[in-house]
Image 1: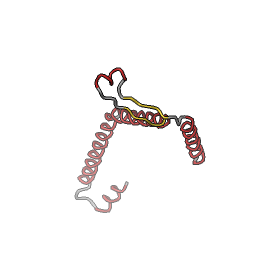
Image 2 (image 1 turned 120 degrees about the vertical axis):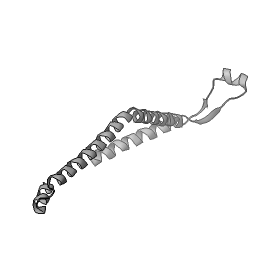
Image 3 (image 1 turned 180 degrees about the vertical axis):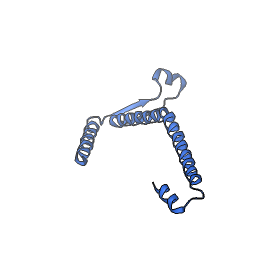
Image 4 (image 1 turned 180 degrees about the horizontal axis):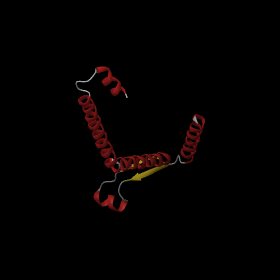
Length: 116
């Protein structure tokens, strides 16, 4: 199974290298259209290789997706915590009831019953 995982990641790495080599041209990224930037006198733009634009876009998309999923699963995590707290409270209650049941009885019998 390890070899399949390493093979998969090797194929992904090779594909990323090929995409990077094929898209080395410099492109200009503009935050605003030229028609709007010229009258305002601001033109926030940056020049970088196209493969960096692609990889940054994919990375930002993944981060947004992970954040969205984390927020969406909040209710499930809260329910799991509540269930865990309830389970712990019930376990404490059962243990205290077992102690009350064996109160005043032989300690050996109580220990054997507690172990089971």
